[in-house]
Image (cartoon, rainbow, N blue to C red; front, side, top):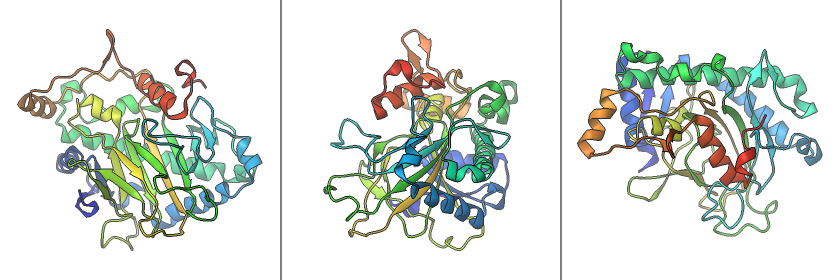
Length: 343
């Protein structure tokens, strides 16, 4: 799959036509770019968060360490501490990250670096905007899958992601991938900035920086293809396109009809010396949400034509959102499964 083939979907209208376009895109690719002023993310707003991200990762290690990530999946993770592809990676990912969980009235429900305390509300506003955009996308997916009003209609996915339903695994993640070279003298040719993986939640929003490529996706032909930071011709858009991908949970709900595509982050092919910054928002439903198959004739008909029939079960019970997240985090960080997800 060539990166330029990833479709660009205008979501200015939350209607069945836009929903069908989005469903078609992620059924084929697992990824889509979305655009439109109603995304809520202007170029200056995105630039401002990247400035804050740069400030955070330049802080002394001692200050970041005071907010170290724990089994609740919130806080700072140092270089090599996360291994997204533990079966194939010799060493952990060449990146730092900071995970922000839910904000309440602009306040983080976790320790944050003191140097960024005065920007807490600004970061919280960005996270809230991400959540709002994801709710729009979840409604579009329901429209595109033609879920009947009797079964919940366009609110079918969104209602499971309503914050009033209880805590969730949703995370705003700031990411910093140091440039190869002097700061990483032990880097070998096989090292990855982020190992091959699929995302753990329902959907992911990805914000990237100009001239900082590196994302690759695994195509249906099982080869790696690079993804552009922005689709060609959109570099100067007032509301830059945002890359969206389906996570494991939306794939489970639709029995694989919507594709959770494996992807990774690599070093520049020509030995470039540029840092890479990105921001990801991982949207999750309430922890106790059961991943029972979605009531969609679109999915049922498609699966029947391929002879597919899979329920999402663990033993004799339906898998929950928290079950899946705990399992994936345990493998990624080497945490004890029984302790993942603690608050």
